[in-house]
Every structure is written in structure tokens, then in C-alpha cells.
Picture 1 (spheres, rainbow, N blue to C red):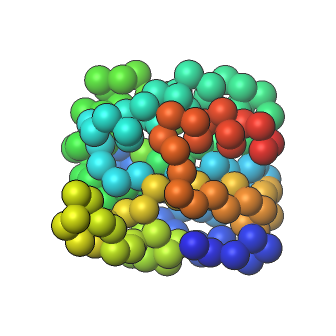
Picture 2: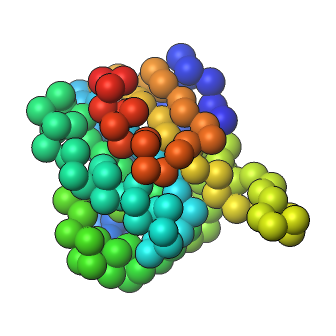
Length: 150
């Protein structure tokens, strides 16, 4: 996980509509950048829907929400449409941003070891500096937790 107080690594990734989005597009706004393992899975759906439900409150506080996974643009589009997600999902199929933000880690699931995205959320300030970093995120609690941090 990246350290609080460091500059957030710059990136450009396609969103669920195939449009390129860069971190620099959001200068002047707070950014909740959350990394999650996979579209349409139980925990990831709870987390995404939680951010969706609270999205008006995030906007009131001058923040945007960006979700990142290694899923494709098409997968993100289906996820957005199925759950009516009002925020941007970014497709990092090459895992470049996932690795830059240090969330690609060894994971153990039922005794099996594999590499994957460790659910992590960063709060980035208006100038692009990481001001909060939350690891070992509990999917259902993360949206309210991040709103409280604003």
C-alpha cells in the first residue's frame, strides 16, 4: 500500500464507456480511488452499490469515486448497467495502475495461494496527494467509512 503524504501515481485508463480518464482530470476535487478484485462478485457488488447509494453525499462533499479492477471495459459496462452505478469504473487489464498503487499481492483463499487485487481504497486530495490509505477493506463498510473520512 502506498504511504499517506505521497503523490498519487498518475494514470490514464479507459472507463466503462471506453473513454480515457486520467487522474489529472480530477485535480481540484477529492478522489476516492478504490481497487477491487472482480465485477459481479458478491463483495465487489456490495462495495460498488454502497458507493452508488452514497454517491450524492460524496458529490456534496466535492469528491468523485473511481473504481478500478483488471476487468475489461465491456465487463465494467455490464456491471454499471446491472446495478445502476453512477460513478466511473476504470479498466486496468494490464494491471499497470494496480501495480503502481501496490495492490497486486499474494492472496490465500481456502488454502490456495494466488496473485490478485487486494481490496484497497485511497483518498486523494485536490492536488493529487494521498491523504488516506485503507487496506484490508471490508467491502460493505468501505463506502460509509470513506464518506466519514471526508
